[in-house]
Image (cartoon, rainbow, N blue to C red; front, side, top):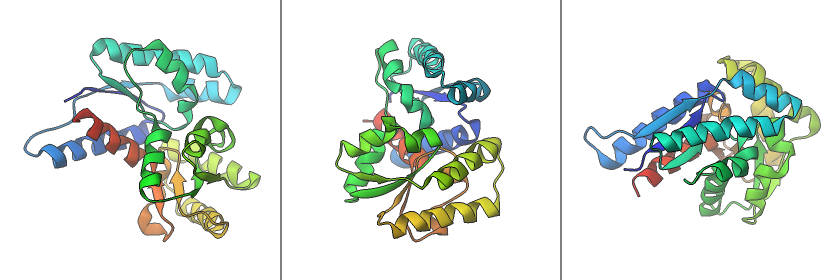
Length: 229
């Protein structure tokens, strides 16, 4: 079994889900008392968010690169960055290490292609929705990407940082998200990517008929399977 190197803490609320899913998948696949072999480097999200809001992506890239290098030296066989937004610096992190990074957008695209999805809506932080670092991975696989309008982008982003990242789960915010999902579905989206690792804490498949693709669950499951290939 390969050792998984997790860069977490962004936020720790969703990193908990990664650990649960990794171990559940390994238990399901291998049975008995098997569990995932993993190393966790949990960052201080305050430092990362400060870099995001001030546009200091090079600084955040250095922080994540140091974490990845530490995990490699500790025996990790591959890296999982437990957040969508910070995949903006994934290429820089990859340059710093000799082990592979399992890219969250690439494994999500694999799932979408398997489901014959050609037009998908994307929810996430404003960086993930507006910038190209994430959407480009989907577009490269021939998948069209829809994002909310400007006002809804700000609403989605504010709920992520002000509520979900600090463990606040609001019924009102769930209704807001579901309304935005309905708008995107009406625009032709065949499904919605929950492209922030905290969104799955608020909205689950049982809440809507629109197919949801929770990147936290997808990423963690793919990491577990990769570790036992």
